[in-house]
Amino acid sequence: FAIEVSLENTDLNRLPIYRNAISSLGVLGDYIIGGTSAKEGLTPFIFVASLSERKLINIEDLNKFIPEQRSVQSGFCKGKNNLFYAGTVANKVNGSIGDGHLLQVKIGTKGAINIEDLGVPVRGEGVFSLLCNSQGTMLYGISYPSGLFFIYNIKTRQTRTFKDIAPTNKDIATYKEYIVEPSDYLCGALIEDNEGLIYGSMPINKLFYFNPKDESFHVLKDELPQVWKRDVLGRIDSWAKAKDGKLYGGNAGDGQLFEINPSTKKVKNLGKPIMMNRIRGLSFGKDGKLYGIAGAPPGYAHLFSYDSENGYSDFGNPIYPMIAPGIEQGIPWRAFNIRTVTSAQNGKYIVMGEDESLSQLLIFNVQEK
Image 1: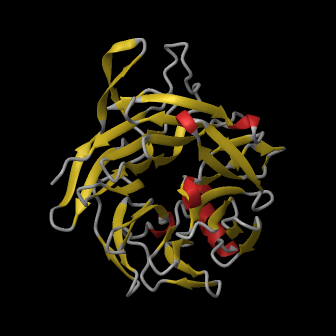
Image 2: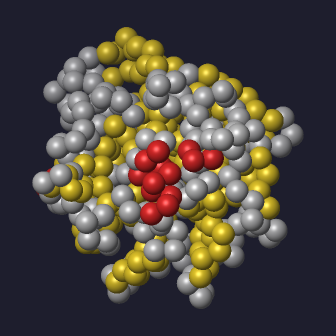
């Protein structure tokens, strides 16, 4: 089914056009928490929707709390006490990117949204990707557009930055030759393994892990899987961790799925679910299968699943019924562009957020094996 959050066919609360591309998602029980991205010069929203009621519950204009932000880009990560964290990218000021902020979001009674501004982690930079460690004590992130790695201590609210994985002048010259921007090559997601190591991607087409114990960076011997001569487009789009601790990642450049064994640090190429580029989201369902979204503009999104026994299943371009005030008869809503994916209710649902001028939530009900 689909949940309407954007259609302007009612006097109910809805996200306005060009400010509602769903770029971050999280789930707390019955509640879906979302963050949006807006067109340049406009500002985003934080919203909450109910799975059981299949409707939008609350919205908050982020401009009321932190002015001049453009995108909740980073995705939501959960910390202690059911608190969610996210990072923003700011609108440009006099041609330069403004200060992105870290947010702490608490979902209260009846889906009430409580937002706290945790400040600016890196001056003159946005927050491109963000991860909270398993203890809920530290945030790890990648800044935009410089690609700095940063650590934020939630208790002390102190930030430290590192240049170890940032693109060098030589890397940037190569990217300019291929006419790609920071949003095309910076690491789009981070993940923590069971030993507390933080994994991500770095230029060009490399994988790294960060060891918080000694604050050291290590480059994996195996690179991101690639199609010949397209390594310049390689970067992490998304991650998911299996119950056995193995890490699954999506390469943006060629839309290839891969697996990392954290014990050996070996990378296994699992191929492409579809012929298009990008794997913008990954999440496990209750059936043990890995679900993901492959394809991005100028192509269309496909929902797929993967397991080692059966390989890939391509569910095609999602189209689900949507019933809401003003459309009580229901309409089939087709999601051409999907940006973010998460699991809900112990993997019963795969929740997907569109990346359009009028974006909705798409919910896939995972069936038992």
